[in-house]
Image 1: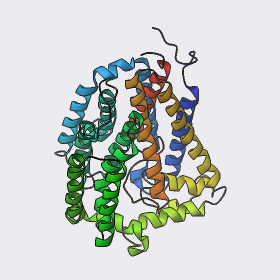
Image 2: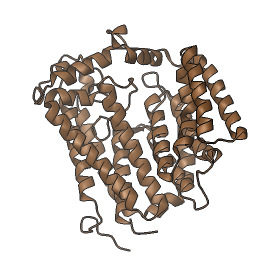
Image 3: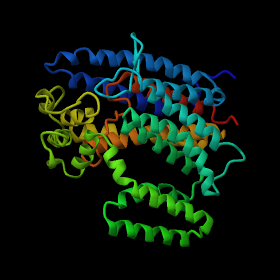
Image 4: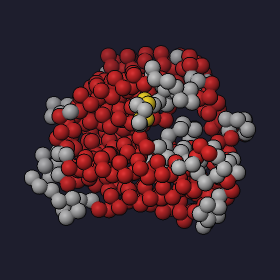
Length: 407
């Protein structure tokens, strides 16, 4: 079947317009963020422009390829991504992290490919006609599919990206029809680990678990292993805490109280909040951000690009960007809802889950309401692999929208 991209009434021009506007804003913001007297920043906006051009070509390619090919090659792509995630652990570290594979002419992050490959495989499993989530234990296979790449990414270490896997998993299983009770028992080990900070809170959480077993009518043979797992995970919390890198523990502590180390781990958050707040309603103007000029704001072209933008374009500019993100996610959800093919629907909602989570986490970090995790803002932050991956994901969404009536 021949498909005309722009001539088809099923081609989502609203979605692609939002993406292109966000990319344009990102190039402008990166240009502004790198106009300081530091030689390592020279030409970064031009590199991002090149990545944008390559990403748009790949987006067009992913629109043209029937989405059934993504389903057919889901498992091979997943296996390749796992191999690359293992290989990157043996690659030379960059800033004490093993996140990039350098091929000489290009450097890329395997974790970005792994996110998309995991979405495909999870969509394939969840869309199977004989699969349902009527029993809690049936979540074990989908959880294993997600936990394997997430654990490898966490070892790099890259906490922010590893959390993206949790986001896509929760989004997709909810789309499948996960009950609130199963959701609670699924996340209960994490809650147990948090509650163990004091004995009274942990005892209170265990009592809440017992009440949940009664309320959701969980049989004893299923309740007992869940209860024991929560006790085990809770007791391992101290080991997990001391197993974190020193800078990761500092980030969590300074998230609770940035003034604990204002010139060290808390510097990022404090300077970001100053930059965002100083923008006011209309901002200081293009290229006029003082936090940026004086290099007070760290990672101002990557993780904290939103702060740079907010300082120069103010609340009005921020509302424009947030509106574009909202519209992108909204159009993506419409595509997921209208897709008649279950694999396509799950793939679309998984992509939306990744994009939405990264927007929420990145902006939350810059505002000081989330711990610093080092995750880029989609389509805006500097980073070729991230931008290209997001454009490829956009192409897949548009692909599904064009073929929404196919079973």
